[in-house]
Image 1 (cartoon, one colour):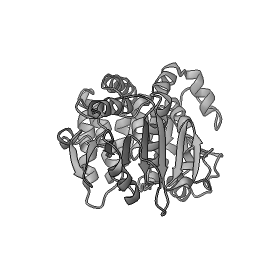
Image 2: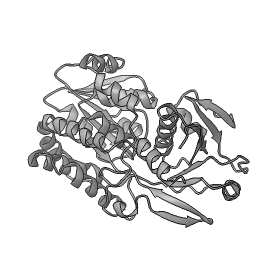
Image 3: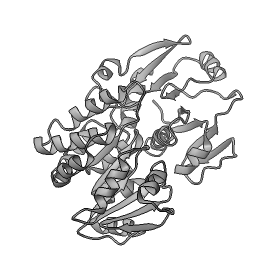
Image 4: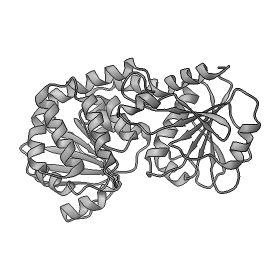
Length: 375
């Protein structure tokens, strides 16, 4: 496929920053690394602006990092469809746009970019077509194993991560608090989690200093309640062995650097979860909770893959802590089992990243898939 063709990506923001985070990374990579003309249609520019500060919330059309951004509102989108159309996470395209797709000459490829899952059934569905509105729509699943689409990972960021040094980490974290060479550095990002109070209490009583870097967000009110004081954004408080800095909202590139700089990364949802894997450091995932507990199956499916080649004691410690962080339980016991395994888990995380690299990144795999469908 010629790189002059246009790719259209549609995104509805549901999970604050997760949906737009994934779509923005994909749009940038398709434009900057693959040279395509990319349009990103997004319904919530305010959330978009939080992760990309130069987005204007009052502009119907704008350009950012080589990508054309259109506000997807209630009025019909009167535009000529691109040759490749991606609806992210089954967001349902506008009727006016679908009508224009039907009128377009042959050669259009329509894809539904699905949510990330490690469940076995994904292998049987990845790449399959489904008739929709009289057109073929293909399901494209990100994933962790051969036979899936891989994970979003830009070459520029992978190269920057490889060049990142201990001195870089100290400089980066030093924006908020002076780095203690003997401390455990933790980035803390999660959905609302009732285990937070116990975790902060444990860290205050720790035998080693624990330096926490918490981006502002859903945890902030819970942390303030647990610690009994206001936590101003940009400020740092010290209580016992714990020193906690509340970081202002960061761009995607800045957040990547935070992950590279810490010893342990607490992440949530999909976007930060994937970035923590590319960071190649131990991570704790807070999966998006679902009413029917379907998230438990998804969590266990990932752990089965992630820990399959991990030494048994370390694998058990990480599994147990993830379960407690997501579902409740004895957090103190789980933490004391996890902490001695950080070094082994760091080695394991690096090996996991190497396996991800071998399977190719999602954008590149997506381009290959589209090329295979163009007649």
